[in-house]
Each structure stands twice: as C-alpha cells, then as structure tokens.
Image 1 (cartoon, rainbow, N blue to C red):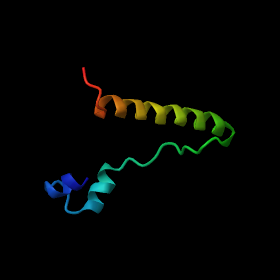
Image 2 (cartoon, rainbow, N blue to C red):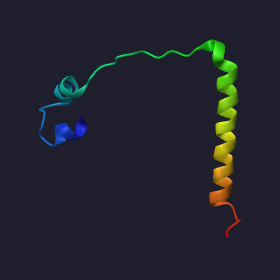
Image 3 (spheres, one colour):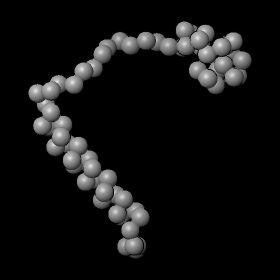
Image 4 (cartoon, rainbow, N blue to C red):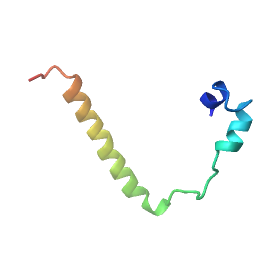
Length: 62
C-alpha cells in the first residue's frame, strides 16, 4: 500500500487502503481447551529452533 502510494497509483495511503484492503472474512480466536497441546507444540518448536541454531552457528562444521 505504501509502495503503491509512493509509486503514484494512489494519492495517499488512505486511498490505497480503501482500494486494496479486502477486510477480514473470518476472525480466529484461541481455543483455550487446546492450550496444553499448543504449549507442547510450542515447546517442540523452540527445541527445533535451538537445534537448528546450534547446527548452523556452532563450532561443529563438516
């Protein structure tokens, strides 16, 4: 939207937002009954990130 405004397609950002903004079809809200599962998955995600970081920035090189 900002690029389109700077590029001259719209006079201001407000016009670009009106023309390009599609709005929202759905609203997603957390399902609190699944909190424990989300926590477990997030823990796995964090461990994966630590592993990737160690493998790509560690002193171990092939």
